[in-house]
Length: 620
Image 1 (cartoon, rainbow, N blue to C red):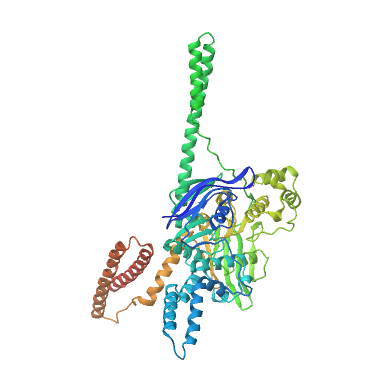
Image 2 (cartoon, rainbow, N blue to C red):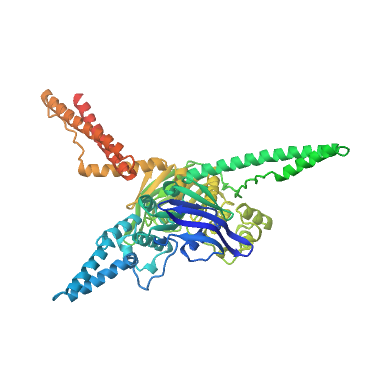
């Protein structure tokens, strides 16, 4: 069954310049489809057309009228004084209306009830139950826990939240509404890693239809079943996730370029033949007619367009020579706000060439840690930098002292460069033509990040500090930033929720949790493996106590007795481990069950290994 169908959709904002032109696609029930394309190609406009918020100029749009549709980028207005809890409960508006009627009937029937009242109460009870009324509290708690909406936050007024927090609460409300068609516009932008992973699991288990716009490549790899790319107002289709899309797009480009080059070579050869035959045909009409016949054939040949290569930014970070071993040293570093301790007893040393990711849930203090390091926030302890260290810093929230200035004037005043150099550097960052005269205050978040990076790359640095560098950037811009960072040979310290970015660059990870910073001297995959191993071991400690290493009290008799006891336990544990193989094979189609069984098997194998070590010690 088709849930969404778009035929020859056209939308323009300036007459003669179409944003969407002849866009056609359809989405089947239960599919999860990613919408990709550069910033400004019309992705968000498409979503607004699907919800009916925006009209279109031509074409047909069909959305299944029997299903509830929700858009995450729309944050509706709620009455003044509404708390987060009120917003979440508004997802159950119909159910709550039934409950109020039930309570009113209960009062009316306190001293006797008529048959009509009993029938009405029974009907309301059935509606309340079928609408999920009895499971309401459990569902709200489950969604809030998954998205990291704390009990303290649930009693706050909704209007007092930041934009990111409101987006997260609105996502929770949509999920609670049991929306059957979900339109997600950058759903991971304001979520921490644990919340993103929870959302991925939710989408995988979701029975409805999902259409998502996202620049989170890791997220797209995990949830997208196919990709629709909007290019020049048209749709290109790819029947796989993001990685498949990248490989297939390159393959199509290579094939089209090969066809184009072959056609051009053939046309060139035919053109050369035509010119020669025309020359020979001055006195020979047969040769001349043949030349004209070949020329007409050339005109009828269906020509392949030369594949377009996207404009890319070409720039790199300026580098300052670094001498010495230690870049910076932290001793007993600590930071608190009132009674709340963000981190304490931080003792870390960074040496030349390291690439470090600072990870942790939202609100743990990652950005504050960076600000303390750079002296923008006061903290306890000692922070010592090497004598030749010079840093460059890209904050999460971009601020310009003079937003009323144009990009061009900003470069002239703040970088003290010539007009030509200002133009050249802005051009490297795709600010060309009249774009350089835009006011800084009118730029989008992604454009402000690009401008700040343009200014940052002009500086000679050997320590690069980035706080959420890929926020607001489209995929092409992210890849460009990554290419520039790859060439940078200094120390890289960054905060990010972009797992693709983390996996690419992190060689060491600092995890900020429970007021401490844990130092993992490894990349992202090994770090994840360590955390999963720890999580799997926790229930084992609680439910399957680790066998105690018993020592014989003395004498051969006691030793023999212990060995026989351990052999019996080993035999039992081997059976437990082997039983997992059967269960794992049976659950091969259920990803979540398979993951749980693999974790439990690993824990059981650890118990078996421990028993074997005890047996070897007793044998010795």
